[in-house]
Length: 111
Image (cartoon, rainbow, N blue to C red; front, top):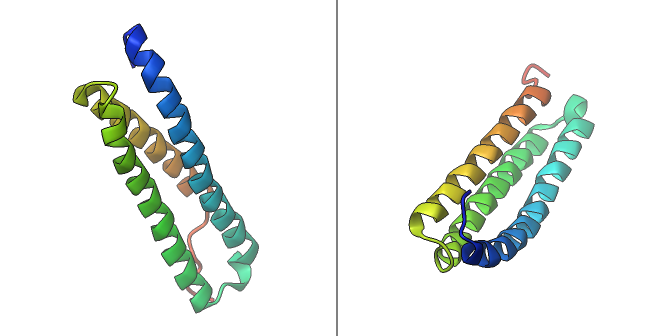
């Protein structure tokens, strides 16, 4: 992102705060993945249901956090620059999710 010196002085501390909150959510996502891996071969229907609910909750938390920060960023940079941050952040998360999808096996419903 191209920011003026004044914008950068205000933007980056907010961004750092945002990242600290994202880390907490991603920690929950990582815990879910590790638990899924540990229980993959012995997964019960209830376990599968819990994984879906927890995964959806983590996704909702990420969306809610982005939405929370939109007005905060708009106080220090233009709506267009805020939209650019939003797009970049969302795309990075999509790439991350795509990589995870390639590493995590789908549920074996035949068991």
